[in-house]
Amino acid sequence: MKLYYRPGTCSLAAHIALAWLGLPYELEVANTRDPEFTKINYLGTVPVLFTAEMGALYQSSAILRYLSRLPEGEHLGPGQDPVMQAQCDYWLSFLNADLYRAFAPYFNPEKYTTDTSSEAKKAIKAAVPAQIAPLLERMDSHLASRDCYLEDELGIVDACAFVYCYWALKVLGNGLKDYPNVDRHFATMMQDPQVQAVMAVEGLTVAS
Image 1 (tube, helix red, strand yellow):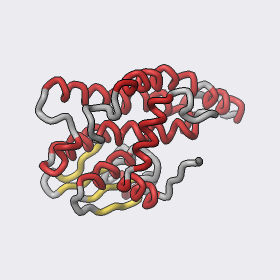
Image 2 (cartoon, helix red, strand yellow):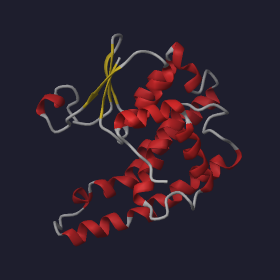
Image 3 (tube, one colour):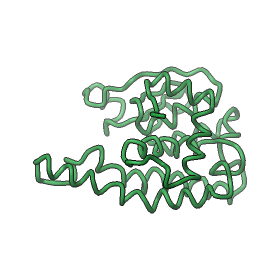
Image 4 (spheres, one colour):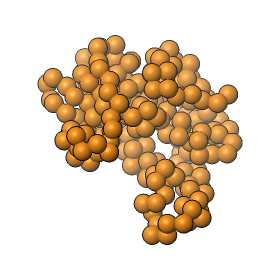
């Protein structure tokens, strides 16, 4: 398998899941502005996962679910229980649709206004914390009675949530302190040796 990624982006979740899988894989940092990359993914986005069986796979949720369906990745997903499968799909949709949409203006404010002034872009970015707050509260409430998003073992939903919490540290002035259960979960992920290794490969750090 080969993962095209960019450090600290949505592809971080797939990178973590691959590390947890324990199977050999290759990595390539994607230049998403290179016309050659659009031959791999016409949308010019990451992650893209190449597999021998299926060729190129796109979209974070689809890639994560694929990895959890491999024999080596069963422990990362919801298993065969339809209720747990629905919960997994819910959380991946929540994170990669609802939460992603709320974060997006912070990283690309120019896409959300026709005003090209720096003041307009700053105003758009300043509105993001209020947009992500109720979503982080939902996550915090869910984690109040559990250590992981699905049952008791870290898996693909946890890897996905980790990415957005990493982004939240950049966006929120006081980090995750207003969301103690989310903060606890993030700390647990940061203590995982494979997560630490992936962060090191991508050159990512978290301020103490």
